[in-house]
Image 1 (cartoon, helix red, strand yellow):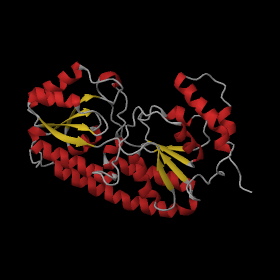
Image 2: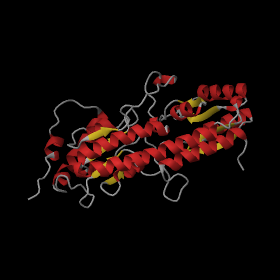
Image 3: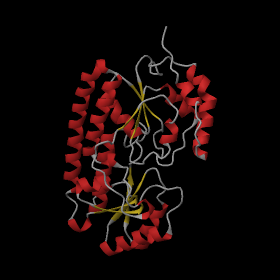
Image 4: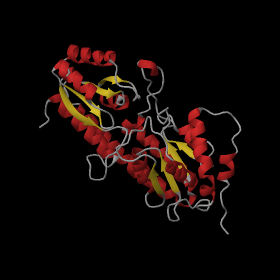
Length: 322
C-alpha cells in the first residue's frame, strides 16, 4: 500500500495570525485540502511516476529541464509571457504545488508571493540563486535591496545549475550521476553563450555603451558586458511610471546621446516611447527577462533569450538593425 502524504493535516493547522493576503491563500488551501490529500500518493506527484519539480517561472523551468533530462517532470507555475513580480497564485497553482515533490524559486525577493504560497505545504523547496554575487538596487524605494534578476548573467545561471543538481540528487539519488553530467554539459553551453554575448556587445563604441530600459532588470548582464545601466523604474510595480522617472531617463538619453532605448516583453513600452519622442532616440526593440516565449516565439529557451537580447542591444546601439 502506498504511503499517503499528511500535507492536508499541515495545511489546516494554522493558529498564528496572518496577513490579508496570507489569509486568502490559507482559505484556498483549506478548500483544497481534502482534494490534495485524496489525490496522488506521496512521491508520485503528477508526473506519471516521475518526481515532479515545480518552478516559479518559465526561465527556471527550462534551465531545470536541461539538468533533469528525462528523469524528472519539470513544470512552471507561470506561463510563457507572464509577469513574475506581482503574480497571484490561483487555486490550480496551489493544487499543483501540493502534489509536487520539489519546488524551485529564484529568491532575492523576486517572488514576493512565494512565502505565503508555500506556507502550510509539506513540499521541500530550493532557492536556486543561493551563492551568486548579488547586486543591490541603487535607486527608488528599493534602494539597498538585492536585484533579483541574477539569471540575466549566464555565469550566475551556472550557479543555478549547481544548486539544481544538488536538489535533484537529493530528490532522486539513483539518478545523481545523470544530473551531474547534464549539469556539466549545460554549464558548458552557458559559458559559450556568455562569451558570445560579451564578444558581440564589445563591438558597441565606448560612447554608446549605455543600456536604457524600462525596468532595472539588466544589472547582471550589463556587469558581464561592460555596459552602463539606466532604467525608468527599478523593479516592476503595480503603478505606472512616474513623470519624474521618465524625465530622469530623458535627461540621461539627451546628455549621453544614447542612440537607442529598450523595454521588456512583459510590461508596457508606452513610458519608453515617451522617452523616444522627447529625445529623438530610437526604440531599439523588445528584450526578454522574466519569461520565455512560446515554443514558436523568439526565445523558447534561456540560451536563445540571452542571444536575442544581446543581438537586439548591439543592433540598437550600433544602428545595425535592418
